[in-house]
Length: 187
Image (cartoon, rainbow, N blue to C red; front, side):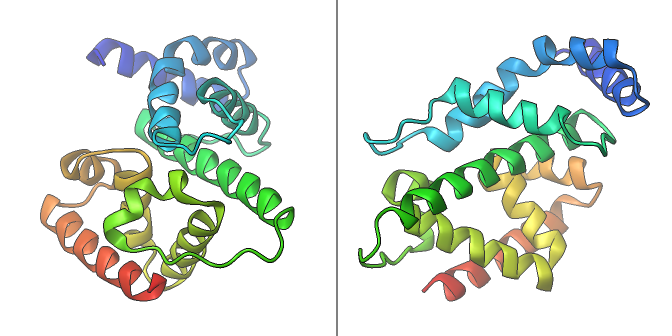
C-alpha cells in the first residue's frame, strides 16, 4: 500500500471517528481489497459445505464495524486489526450456530501445527481455538493480540511490532509463549 493511501485511510478513519459520515462513506473503496485479503485468509482451505463467501464475510464485518456506536480507530493498522477480530467473531458465531444444529458429533482435537487450517477442519476446532484465545486474553492480553494479528490478520512479526508499538524481540518472545500456551490449552 502506498504511503499516501495509508495516510488518506488514517485521515478518513480519524474523521469518521469524529462523526463525519462523508469520510465513513469514502473508507470502503480504500480498504476493500485489504479486507478481502483478510477474509480470504480466514476462508482459505474452507471445507466444501461452507456457504459463507469472502465477499459476504467482508460485508458483514464492515457493516459490524461501521454500525458500532463507538467508532474510534487509532490508525489504519488498528482498523484492520479490529476488522480481523470482527471476521473471527462472525466465523465463530457461524460455527456455534452450525454446531447447535449438529448435536451429538464428537469433538476433534486441534494441534497447533494444524491451527492454520482450523477453519477448514470443523466448527468444533474453531470454537476450541476461540475459547483458548479468550482465556489467553484474560491471562496475557498482549500475547492474545499478537496471535490475532499474526494468525488471523496475517501480519509479519515486524508489522505486528509496529501495530502494537513494541519491539520485534518482544513480539517474538510473546508469539513463542502464546503458541506454547495455546498448544497446551487446546490439547
